[in-house]
Length: 141
Length: 88
Image (cartoon, rainbow over all chains, first blue to last red):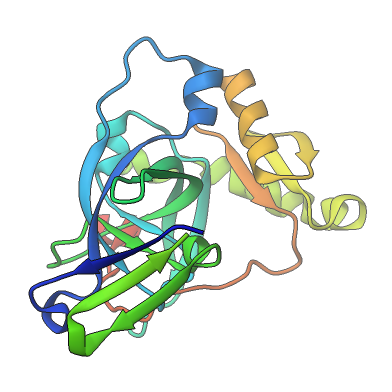
């Protein structure tokens, strides 16, 4: 299980963030074989142990030209039963050169710089260590 | 935007209409639905997605796990306001 430590300027301010690339899943690409494949969307992702599933910002799926494959309800501290579409995506973490194929939930990440929340669906395959005094986090996948 | 919000609405209604029967015969599996038609059930979500792409290409279709109650998707960050609701 390769591990990588990412040191940030101020992890308290930003949270544990890293750059990712979001594209259509390989299942979609290999089966549908679209004539045009848009480039992957680069996004800042927050590793969020409070998110039960990975979330992508509204608009990313449209940039990728993919259609929803699910519709679900999510709950936040202030809202319940918010309907959100789900999309089959490929998520690449360049730091690890690792790809995930997963169904992510689409939501507005209002007023935040993140394009993605990496949720417990991905973390279920990983070890995540938050080292606040060192402004770093370690992810082993 | 109103049209966008209709995507998969028909499929979700179809799932609810067939939920009891699906629960009896295919609990825990993943069902593929297009429009008013239940296409098939699969052991894995990935298999269901693959069949959906094979049959319908890039068109929307619904994949849903057959469960009595949908598992809650919780987010402790309160930055998710909106989704489809914001277009109201």
